[in-house]
Amino acid sequence: MMTSSIHLIASRLEKTLGCLLKRARSISSLDDRPFHHGPAFVVHPDPTITIASSDCGPSPAELHAQYLHNDLFKECGRMPCLSWDCPASLKDEVREWLLIIEDLDAPWCRPIVHGLYAGIPAVKLSLEPEDFVVIDDEKCTLDGGFHFGRNSERKVYTAPKPMLNHGLHRYSFQVVALSQQLDVTLLQSRATRKEYGKAIQGLVLGWGVWIASCERRWE
Image 1: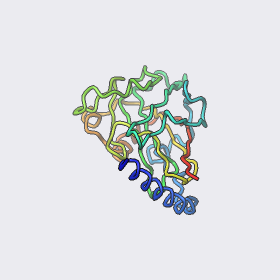
Image 2 (image 1 turned 45 degrees about the vertical axis):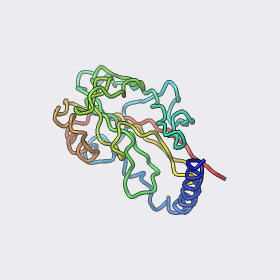
Image 3 (image 1 turned 45 degrees about the horizontal axis):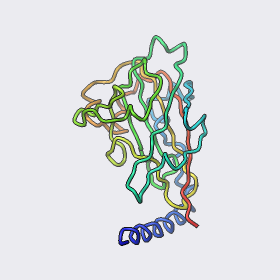
Image 4 (image 1 turned 90 degrees about the vertical axis):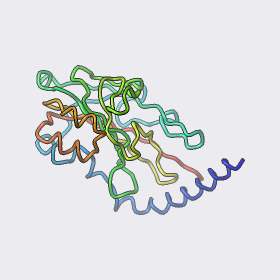
C-alpha cells in the first residue's frame, strides 16, 4: 500500500514537471547533437547503412509497452531486435561495428545514452536481446561477443522511459562501421560516449540510424 502511494505521488510530480519542460522543448532540442553529428563523422555526414527491426518494424517505428521501463515492477523493457546491411563498397573494409542508443528529446542539455556497444564483429549484422546478457562484468563482455560502454545510468542497457506528459520521445539507434578494431583496453574500460567519440575519429566508414518513438501520458 505504501509503495503504491509513493509511486502515485512520484508520478504526479513527474507529470507536472513534464508539462512544464514540454514548453521548452523547441529551445532544448537535441536534434543537432546525436552521436553521428560528432567530429568523427565530418567525412560521412549522411547515412549509408539501412537498419531494420524484425519485431518493431522499419524506421520510424513505435515502441510498445514491452520495450519500455516499468517503474512499478522495476523491470527493464525488452531490447528491440536490430539488423542492418553492409554496403557492397564497405564489405572488405569494415573491421567492426559500434552501436549507440540515444534519446533525442531528453529535457536536458545533453543526450541521454541508453546503450553503448563496441567491438561488434564485422560479420555480425544483427542483434537479439540475448546478445546483451553480461558474460564478464569486469571486462564489459556480452554474450554477443562484444563489449558494453557506460550509459547515462551506468547500466548495460536502460529501456526508454520518457517523462510523463513531456510529449513523444524519439530514440536513435545508431550503427557505425569502423575501419579498424578498437583497442581492447578501451573496450574493457566501460568507456563513455565522449571517449568513444574520440577513439573512432578517422575510422568511420559509414553509419545508419533506426528511430523508434514512444510517449507516456497521464491525463
